[in-house]
Length: 210
Image (tube, rainbow, N blue to C red; front, side, top):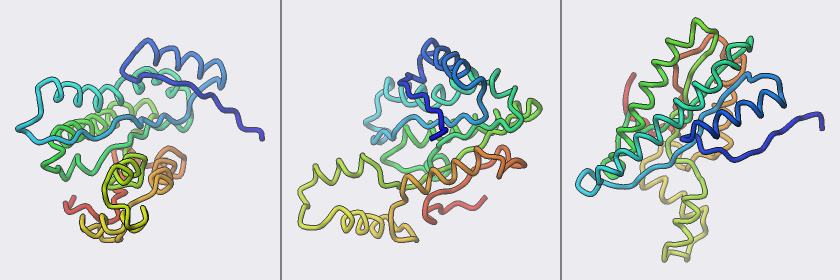
């Protein structure tokens, strides 16, 4: 009941809208402790059918959705005693998929950007980390199920069969709540000595080492 909430829509690729959000946030709360960058979705295409414009759009979405808010909120974060920036990335950054080539490349660049920001912001007292999510049960999967011809099974059974088909060791899709817990940890003082790091939230789907 004592919580204060500010809800608004903002195009994170539009600097004017972001600056307005920063001002509104400062006026309402007086400051910021945690910034979570969580924008963007995957583009399904292979190299042969990805147009130049699609590459540009994907890179802009993945890069500037992190860069713009982080730069705009920097002055408020510098005033916090427990400042943190957390970015929602994708396992694609380290484990690219052929049918998601543009998103995979953009996510890899985004992860590099996050690590570079962590080094630059550390002397300012701002930690920068990210989570790399695998397959999470979200609205896009619900829509795919509804648009599919296979309605002889429940949505839950359909997801379970997909998880098995994809080879996810835990045998299921992740939930938004599980991704949120990882974001909460990296954005809170619980991870006060952690910066430039990533948390894998993929149910064991990661195949890389290091």
